[in-house]
Length: 77
Image (cartoon, rainbow, N blue to C red; front, side):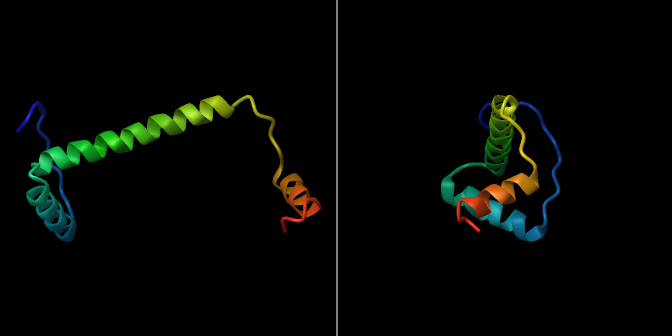
């Protein structure tokens, strides 16, 4: 089981579990490795989203009404 060191019980929908088993077999990885990789990617996405949010905090806010008016003014709607 590679270098994974903690153990958990995870319950999957039977169809998802079957798909994971097939994917694991075809990619020569364990189901645990697939799930670990998926969780890491999910968390990396969250980290990127938080960084993007942090980078945009200094941008000026615009109301929805002002946004619609600007889109109309520029022929977008």
